[in-house]
Image (cartoon, rainbow, N blue to C red; front, side):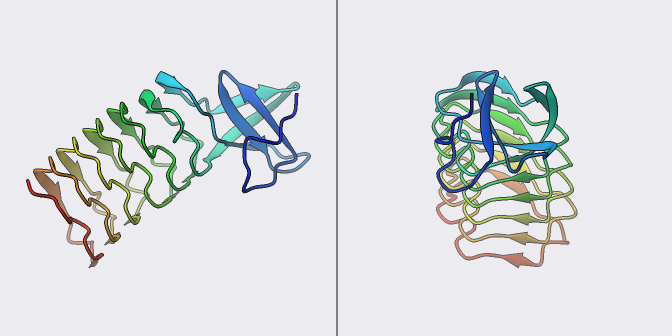
Length: 188
């Protein structure tokens, strides 16, 4: 069954659900899919590297903005090495998300990706990411420490704003730009 309501800001020729996760096919004949808004998921989820729909095997390459923002019950997410891009606010408000590993295949992420993930304690950043976007960890009140890879060059504005439990951060010498209020209200 094709549904067009999963993504109101984008145009997909077809959408479908596989194991509770919604996907979009951009155009007829495409071999890749994007994870779309998948509300109400909980527990540990694993995004597969490949999904089969109508006897066609698709590779999962992107996670669209707000994909899991309506899933406060998520506790962990496994992202496959096929994903190269993660949109804005993907995990916004996932208040039970405790940890996540972003694979080295990811080369870009969106703003406020983990905003208000109040249980998030650790994140592993891949060496492929050079920029921590605006507000990436804003209001992640349980985040204690993070290591930015040696390939990092910039930390965006409000990146760690209100991370009240943040005790340490390793900023490599490769970082040449730190945005305003990047560590605002980081009292620890």
